[in-house]
Length: 327
Ligand SMILES: Cc1ncc(COP(=O)(O)O)c(C=O)c1O
Image (cartoon, rainbow, N blue to C red; front, side):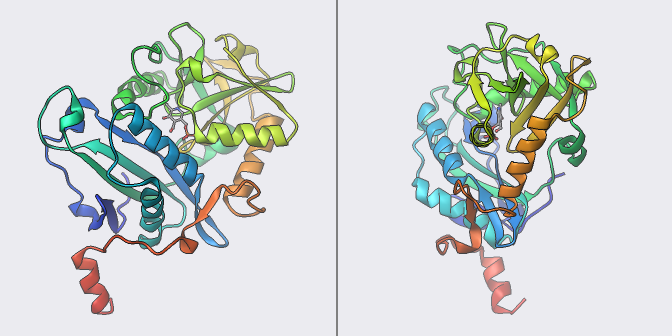
């Protein structure tokens, strides 16, 4: 279960964790009319640092634009609110979930008459697929569920309703004993995992599906491609046939939740030597040394929450009272 933090940012105010509630008639609960982000902050020698905050805020607003949801806050306000939530909850390594959703008004299938609400919460969180997954890798299977065709749902938007597809992929993978499921796109090419992007290493070149393969434009995918270029690898975005996963030297997945996770086998077919390969290990090492502040942040990927501008949202009455009492 998600561990409780102290406060949650809701529509510009901080409320106590247990008070962050919505009405059962909330449009998003019925129809998936929401947009969200998944962001990580890492513990560094300079305190908690949010990874690629600008990129996540930009994607959040792009998703809202796609879904015609006018956000009642500016990107700068959301940026500051995210830093504030980490800071005020005194979190270090944590997962942050900004959520923009259609609230309670009516059940019209044109959602634009329902209000747009915003919440941001954060909590301490380890690795999504288990810490062993990062070290030793995981076994995955190709799902019988495809990603959406381009003219059905907008894959570039991180919209709540689209995650029903991810849930089918994840359930099937777990039922078959895999730690993650890899979905094909509607044309039968490799698309992505239920919650992560995929890379294949073959002959020293990195391959990853293009945006047209119904993938989310992952922030960790972008960071991995940047690191790979700088490590001297060619990175090619191209259609990937399923069987390329079986004959690759290395396969790994990337995502905010998963981070960078080696794949040991696909459909019970061993990938390479069946253990994390040299390119995957190098990328993991580069990635973790930057996000954990062990080497200089040469890409300006980190936002140190204690350096951020003073926050504007008010603390809930209960925590203001306890501060006055000196607790
Ligand atoms: C479907 C899907 N693909 C890919 C990703 C990876 O994206 P990111 O690296 O921005 O977390 C995620 C996670 O957000 C996802 O849900």
